[in-house]
Amino acid sequence: MDTKYLDESKKYLMNTYNRFPIVLRKGRGMKVWSSDGKEYLDFVGGIAVNCLGHCHPKVVIAVQKQAQRLIHVSNLYHIEPQIKLARLLVELSFADKVFFCNSGTEAIEGAIKLARKYAKDHSPHNKFEIITAYGSFHGRTMGALSATGQEKIQKGFEPLLPGFRHVPFNDIEALRKAVTDNTCAVLLEPIQGEGGVRMPSNDYFDQVRKICDEHKLLLILDEIQTGMGRTGKFFAYEHFNIKPDIITLAKGLGGGVAIGAVLAKDSVAASFQHGTHASTFGGNPLACAAAEATIETLLEDGFILDSCRRMGEYFITRLEKLKKDYPSTIIETRGLGLLIGMELTQAGSPIVEACAKRGILINCTSGNVLRFTPPLIVVEKEIDDLIDVLEDIFEK
Ligand SMILES: *Cc1c(COP(=O)(O)O)cnc(C)c1O
Image (cartoon, rainbow, N blue to C red; front, side, top):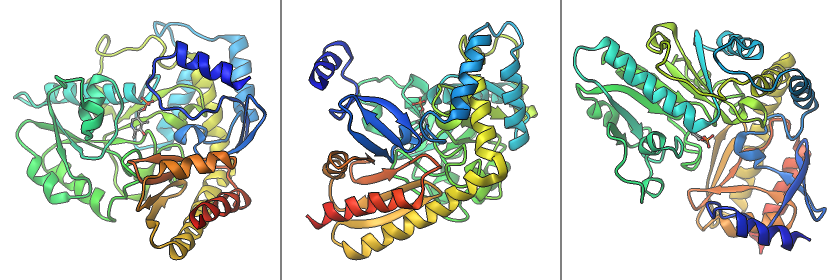
C-alpha cells in the first residue's frame, strides 16, 4: 500500500526534499504512525515545531472551536485571536509590538524590511547593510537566503539580494571589523540550529549588544528555532542577559499550525506604518487561536519549561556517556534545553536511517551532526529508548 503513495509522491510533488520512504499518517504526543501501521518515537518533532507533541488536545480543541467560529478574515479588520496572541507575546518579551506572517522565512523578510526602513527613517545617509553569520540559516525566500551564510543554499539563485555581510559566528572581533557606515543591523541565531547546533560562548551576545549600541545598529535575533521554550527558557535571549531590538518567531509558535511573527520595540516598530508591510494570511484567526493555546499550555505552571530543562540535561548526560564509550565515532555533544546536537566523525545519514528502521526518528544537519529537537514533553524513558538504539547502532 505504501508503494502506491511513494510512487505518487514522486510523480506529483516537486523533488525538493530527500524524503525517507515513510508515509506518516497519525500522531499523538511523542509518537507518530506510518500508513502501514509502524510506530515511531519522534525526536524530530517537525524540526522544533511540535513543541507540545503531536495533536495536543488543547491545541486540537482550540483549532476546532476557532474553525467553527471564524477561519479567515482580512487584516482590514481587527481580529480577536490575533490581538490576544500579540498581547501574550508582548507580555512575555522585550517587545511592544508584533507583526504576524505565516512562516519563518517571511518573519525574516519582515525583519529585514523593518531594519532597512528604520535606518531610512533615522539616519541621514543610506544605511542598509545587515551583518549575519556564516553557517546561519534564515530561510529560503530571496532575502532570507541572501542573509543565510551558506553557499549551498544560495547556489543557483544568484543574483542575491545585496546588502549582507557574513562573519564567522561567535567571533566578536570579526563582527566589530565588519561594521561600516552602511551597517544598519546585525542578524544572528542565538544558537545556530541548521548550522549544526553551534553554541555561542558565554559573553558573545553581551559583546554583540555592546557593538550594536556603540554603532546604533539594530540587533535582530532569529528565534525561529530557539524560541517557544526550546532552550528551556521561553526565548533563548533570556539566557544572555541582553535585550534584542527585533526577534523573529515561527516553527513552534503555532504548535504545528503555520504562523510566524516579528516582534519589536515601539521605537523600531514605528517604522512600519499603513501600507509598508502586509500579509493576507498573516495573523489569521485559526493560526492565532492555535498559537494562543500553544503558549498558554506551554506556560501553565511552568511545568513544561522546567521539564524541558531537566530532560535536556538528562539527554546531554546520556549522550556524553555514549561519547565516552564511542570516542572514535562521536566528536562532541552540545546544546541547550531540547535543542541538542551530536557531532560525528562520519556522515550522519546512515545513523538516521538505521534509527528509522528501528522506530526512532532523528535528524541530521550539516552532514555529520545528529540533531534532536523532540517535543518538549519528552520523558526519560523515551530518551533511554533512543540511547539504547544509538548504542546498538554504534556497536555495529
Ligand atoms: C526553520 C528556520 C527558518 C525558516 O523557517 P521556515 O518556516 O522554514 O521558512 C529561519 N530561521 C531559522 C533559525 C530556522 O530554524
